[in-house]
Length: 104
Image (cartoon, rainbow, N blue to C red; front, top):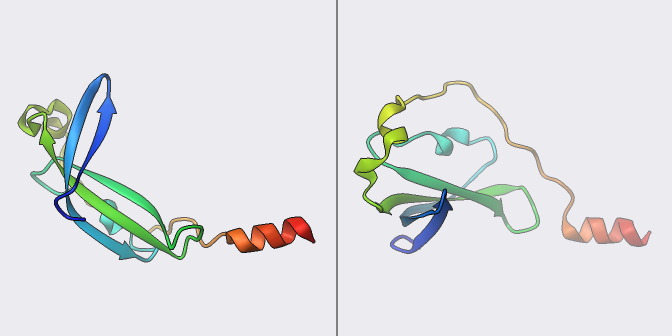
């Protein structure tokens, strides 16, 4: 939910992110992975509904701690946008299908 927080630990430092958006997109909508200029963000992606790869649940969080203005990598990296269209892997077998195949 927007306003929730999550943590990512890297090299012994815990980074805190505040959720700014949550959307469900098709696997072909890879633009959700683009950087957001001027912001230090993390994008979390999972399958939706669970156990399928029909859609992607995309959660974006903005860094709130430690102070993101001290991020050297974010300041040095130029913002890039991609016009190439890629497709993430398609729909794999569901849990039910895998169980059915294992039985028969």
